[in-house]
Length: 135
Image 1 (cartoon, rainbow, N blue to C red):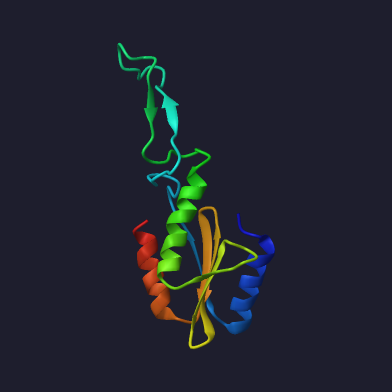
Image 2 (image 1 turned 180 degrees about the vertical axis):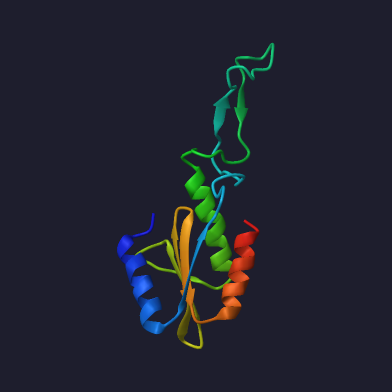
């Protein structure tokens, strides 16, 4: 979870630099992500397969509410940022920054499924918005 002071600082940087502020909400962000751990669930009552009611299912993807879901979501978006050359903040691992020519051009704060991003590069905004649509 993001540190609220980091979010306030991000918004302060945006307003003082006159950068655009974008917010996005990823619908179903915890669904359909691959999970690393082995997770088993019981068959739902009323949906049990006759003859094997005592069997369980091994999950291949996350289910909403699963405690592993936030980690799987974070790992997916983190891998995108690392691939795109973003740096992860050492004090707040939900803050990602990207520099070009020695100056910050893009800053992203992740907080569960509500996220903000600021910057001065329309090109990076458009690239990031196209990634976000594909989530």
